[in-house]
Length: 248
Picture 1 (cartoon, one colour):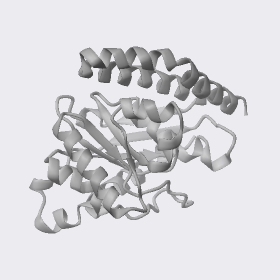
Picture 2 (picture 1 turned 135 degrees about the vertical axis):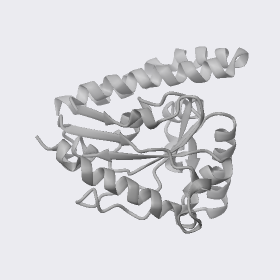
Picture 3 (picture 1 turned 120 degrees about the vertical axis):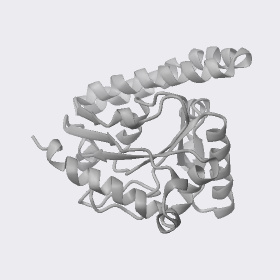
Picture 4 (picture 1 turned 30 degrees about the vertical axis):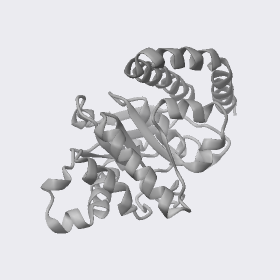
């Protein structure tokens, strides 16, 4: 419970104490939006890395060299834990926005930081608004900002992490329309940090693997038609391969 309490103190304390930082970042953004974007990114990455240290998680990262550092990409990952965001966002080399559920837009201060970081809020119940969010994400990528989405649509609560929920094909329109590479991300054992034994936070072994870039235009007609399933199969293979690395 001590780790859980410490994480809560850090999160709530940071959101409250960061109000002056939000103001400073807003002022910086008036003169140099890119400078503000990068400084906001690095601030939040530092906070996320600190929180991960509190959890005691032993994190192994594989294939980070597969992530381009000079062009925007679409990150596609499996989703088991709230900590998936911290595990992946803390390692993004360039400006990156996440697509989150619309309910998070109502959380004071947190939603402000998310907007600063180019996160988008997806209304899963409204198809028209959902399409609008995807098209906004396409524009983000075209402007040089990577996007990360968990295409299962929600946290996967199945007992076996290999038993993923179907990937929503609409998520992949971001890559096909923006003509950017897809980076498959396999996150192993993250649910055992917290969700598997709520409210206790336990130090466990976690693996984050970045697969080789997928270029939609280079896929066969059949694979491109079912690009969600194609990407999910790659992530499944990585999860299966890394399962032994999470065992003590």
